[in-house]
Length: 618
Image (tube, rainbow, N blue to C red):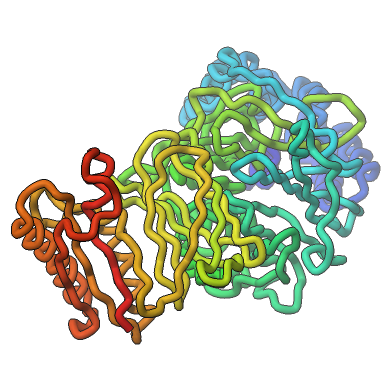
């Protein structure tokens, strides 16, 4: 609305010929003193009561204080066809009704515009207003609860919650002056006994400093915290993206992610995908579609938890618009993106929208509805793993003397993500029994699509992974110098103990996610992830020689079983050689049914006996 007024006021001509009125008007435009501005505009209007632009400027400054009633009262004085540029005044009145949440009045006022030269603008306005009216007249369920323990006496905003809902962080405006804002990072945990929140407390140095830190986000498993810090010595621009790695109950020293993600332009709102291989953030760097766009880049996780970032790319349409699109949140399902925008059809200023990942990119954004969205600004919206609870900041729900507070609400079903369950585990050295950090990856065994990737805690060895409620999933854990772990996850809320064996002669693993066609040595396509993990192990440990050992159940003759197990071992050996693994490092043998690990009297036992193992030779 302010930009509409400003554009009109800066037109090529004025509706008055009085030089004195124009002189006072021009002085009013450049003064910073509100009282002086009002006096000058009053004098300009007294000189020429038909001076339309002077009324517009009065209304514009009323809008700066969100005084909609005053702005409407001012414009009502010139809402007649006898005044110049009447269609523009009508449009301004319609826009003010829209911004104040009076959508029916906005539609009626826009429909009253009859100036033929203004028809295109009229139709654009009506499309927005009617969309807002439709959303307003069909409210969605909304039951906000103030998280009083999480909130402080200051403004609290940009909530971030781990996917299990056990840990939350916020940005807190601890000091505000006309010239400077001081933001810090706070966090809180849920009590395990009664599910209530602990009192939020600030993070200690070096996470918080005497400069600005904010716009933070947890990774889905809580292992990483990303945030934005300003004016640090290791920064690239004024404000840059940083991250810290959680180690036990403490955080590592913040790490500036540097170029090419950070630039001399503005970067903010970072959030890591649950697969750990994609970072979403906001920037105004070129090429931008609007003022702020959502960008993304590829991420690689090292075994020690450090991250490397690739060149960033604009997320493009249909998510980004020619206005501001910002505050992204990617759900634990890695398919559902929530973000704020004032460029998509909404209820006023910035609304929350949802878009879903498709084979071709992203779906057309959907407004999540009224009254979650309103005629005000909504931003910073996150959802738990189950997809049922949303967390956001608002200053319009309670008249409690506070400004922005954090709330929790049930999420309407139509805009929910895929529900996710969590799997917890611990990684340790099979010989020393000490906890270790290692890369943990979970993937869909049917599609081989990666579901989750992160690093187990260096001190505790623990990890928390997220996966869809339904499906078949494999887990791989690897660390240089150790045999990787290959397993399956049979149900949500499993607890997985991962004992990594040192890559030494005599140690072995079973490839639980290597699949063959029935009674055949043909490797099925869903084995792709397992083969990639084995190939990676061979490349990370170039001095290791292995033997691929095939086994069968006892169905069939001994000769047939040895031949089948040998053929399967040979098939895997050929695939590794095709991946440029030195053939001299790979032996293969088939042992048929001679070394069962379970009772062949049951199908479960026979399935366990049909396996391929990797033995370390040297």
